[in-house]
Length: 188
Length: 220
Image (tube, rainbow over all chains, first blue to last red; front, side):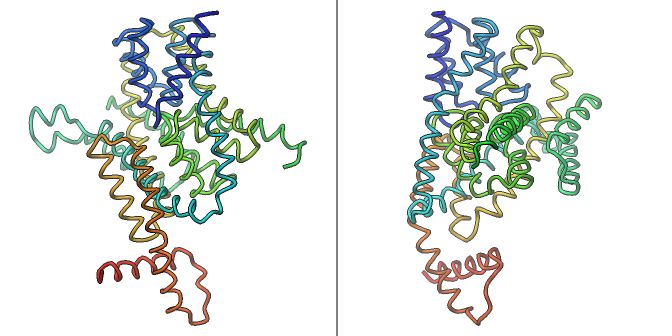
């Protein structure tokens, strides 16, 4: 019981202090590992790998994974609920305030600036994914040849996906499933 | 909203966000293409603009962006209970899948098949994000000032470690300073082109406003 409460509380803190999502929870997790001895730096590397290779928000996957390792199925659920609790409370409050002030001139001016910024942040995140997905930086540093910089097979796959996406506009998950199949069949 | 319609809506919220959570690889940003399709284009529950506001707020408030966005949308659709249900929906698949993996597969991420699949999935995810960004950009970048904010935020977050919190706060301030300027030049443009015809096409008007702006900027 005490362990569940501690799990809940520790992950409540992670949810409360990590701003920005995804890998933003990482520094708090390594701090937690050092303080509680629940898991090591190696475990964290494993956690990241598993969280990235399964669907769902990374922060949630990490919480479930740690909770599970520590205290079984219920531990995973408790840790996850702890992590999402602060965000739910805060967002519900903000949503209420936002509703009241949405028409105010100053709020509209703020959002005039926020929307392109939000787009820019998402574009940067997308470029971050593209860097990992399509470039082979380690090989490029070794050989220095431009042809080695890009993973051409994956660039080709990305191009094909983009063309079919624009043309057919099917559900995104279809493209993800197809890309996974292509990856396995052709061993990209 | 009528009380008797709450139950189906809560169920729909839960199932929809469970589907989103279960088909999203890589977190909040990768969720965007599915949100655009399911919420904006199919159900008309929200607009691209509102979606961007949620993301912007999600960036600078604590918590995982996917959770913040789910709470926002659920709340706007069916009150606080809706926010709660949507959030539980978005995390449910993770909890189930990770629990199964920790129970049955010890080296899941090391499996060759998983690695090959993820090489492909990552390529798809960056294409999907690119497509989502283009859609957002069409809505959010309305004139020269918006382009400046967009490019500045993009460059700073690509080249430095500055926290997104600061970028969001600074662009909010920039919006306060620049919106009146943008409005003034848009007004001027409208008066000039007021030849009886109503400017129905918003994007056309905005593009013209942007031209006006760049002329002004050139002189200043």
